[in-house]
Length: 252
Length: 195
Image 1: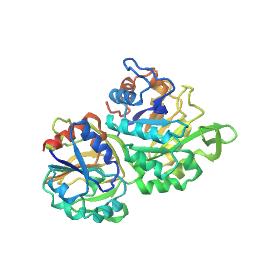
Image 2: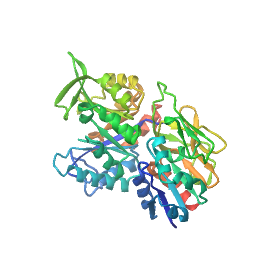
Image 3: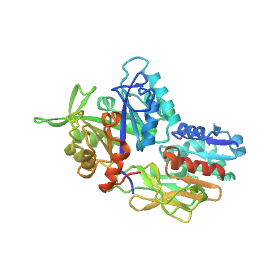
């Protein structure tokens, strides 16, 4: 039976993990490769690296990171953050990334999704979408790290991305991100019902129950989180054992 | 031991090379007929779209060479599907080394396509799986599948059973990504290298 996936997300800047990651027994907690290996060992099903480097060296540091992670790791990983062209994607895949996620560039020019899917196959093209809820407009998609409202309806955009060839959607609720009050079950469920591809839920995880909810009530295929894993608030293995006990299929 | 990884611009070959490197094995990425013929073992990874992969294989004459090989050969993911006769993906004619036709998973509410993630291996029947247990997990990413047949050496379910691995003589192939399937995948690669 296909399992639900648990995915830690690492924010990377200039080749180092940021947002403070604490792990006992890791000499250098800023080293993304060491962290990635630690998560893999604990049972992470996949990893996501989000590059937030703003400098001109971005491309070079990201390629080095991808190569180092691919060399060390035997589980799949996705790379995202500021990826905008077919050439960007090609170099990351050639260096060993399994999937590449695109966000603002896809909203700026949706045909990019078609081009990438045709060239590399849908299986490695993830469209990341950041949604925020307002009482007036419902769930809409934001870009540029959440600063710009595209005024696009979240479900409509996710459906379009999947139809254009995205093989997976990474849906982050900005309204929930950082709250630790749980995933956005309504929009995650609405997107999961609307599209024919897997949906990764992100934003708001604070407790193990939140993962149970997003899998059982919102039909997400994977749950992504950052800080609760980085600070050891929830161990990946204990989370997966807990979910398995709730009847949610897990790889243990 | 000489190991050739076939180079036909077929996707994530780098991950396969790294997996071999982790096993302490040197491999050569090549499309050269001589180099491929004299290798002790051959890996044939693949990702992407079937018709363009076949186009690339034909352009390099590999469609003629591969069926004649006698050494242990391991197809991975699209590298497995290409061994069949035909694919529904853009109506592609494949290498025809094994007698299966590749079909697309039907879309269903609870079964998204691609089939993406960790799934169990079942009904294992090959030395390729020595040391593994029924229900061990491996990582799949694919929208097309080979049905179960007399060539099947492992199955998985989504929701119906399909071929997770196939074999005909020296040609072995797996639908999942051995190089991305943790210790289980590593063991399968090790088993292959011992064949």
